[in-house]
Length: 270
Image (tube, rainbow, N blue to C red):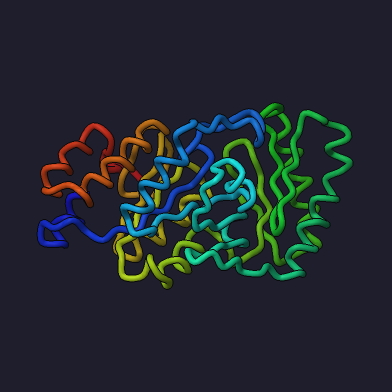
């Protein structure tokens, strides 16, 4: 992070903050609906957004409606279903192509036989994407992959993306990196330096996009990554957001930056 300060001549840089949701803002749960959202999370994110002139967005595999439900009453700019859904900072909800919605429904429907045979699997149909979770039956990973491959074969406009105990079908051309770049062309993100924080394979596109635009990707936890920085856990994400706010609002950005040392580490192996 120190290079951003240096590029700004020692002044607090104008940052745009982007984060994943599951595994980043909240701990991963056994099922999508079982996540434990801290009571004060919405308030903290609201403060962060205001301190960064509302240049704060969530980019997630979940639907926008899920994020609104978990963070109620807060309504942030959100890219959902890996960017297939997107709500701009001014509240405009971009319409999703009807063909994508129809294809996602067909892919989800094709999973019925597998789900009937293995009720421990969890299907998460979305408006524009489909996620098949096997966290409660990790031995079925190969079966899930084969079933999803068969289902998407009839829909070449969709690609499969592996995640943490999940396989997702998403429309080609949409990913967290393209969502980040779309936000960066709009107010209040335009002209700022992006930081993307995430924990999973699907976040690598976001790391890449942020770094291509002169910013930083921050990987949560272990694992191979292209992100330039690494952070330990969800609690550290909260501390980092607070630290970034202090950089912006504090009287001396460089001195506040020292508080990040226990939180952030440079990625030494990609």
